[in-house]
Image (cartoon, rainbow, N blue to C red; front, top):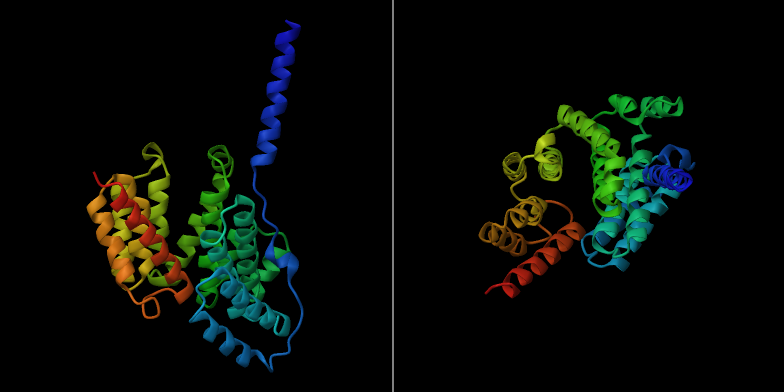
Length: 297
């Protein structure tokens, strides 16, 4: 009996430990706002960043690009454009250039914080979160002027959920998905065509990830990808995502190959999404195509 009691106690302690260590917390971006309002050099720095953005195709280039945007932040702490761009490219660092989970966690958390900083350029939103209001409730104050920060905020959290959490961790952190869907709904009200169908793309991933008994549906996912492609026909991400996340899962090799071949045929400078992101999508598409060829009977 004593042995059973000890085993039960050990199980309880283990479950408490797992629960406490599985719940993710993100440091709020508004806790790390910088000061500085010297805007005299900002236009030159933004021009420098845009020039680098058109050629950045490596981790080293991406880090240099982020450094330029961080220099803008030091010069003009409320520069919305620089803040959400830093968030956006931290997502790419985690997704494309990080093999270790700890590195992905770092970059995705940086992305979330910077997108929140960008949201804080809306004074009403900043007042509400500083008063202790939940970020989703406070986000009702955000406008179309903050839409990129909103969109890449939930994107960074999706990547964190997908790449950094174990199956148990995902169960313990369903709040991430719930809050993301609330942000997607807010963006739908502002501009449903945001980022060439970014919301449709994200809903497709949601329908793929969720078990059917909880509302998941491969058919609905395909419909959402279709809407994303209709909304942003020149956005490489939409065809890449459909091939990578839906057709590969369905085992539809022909459709997958068709999407991937379309991706690699695009001009990364002219297609939707920025050049650094397009380089990543095309590189990943080539790897998937090579894998298809190598697995042919």
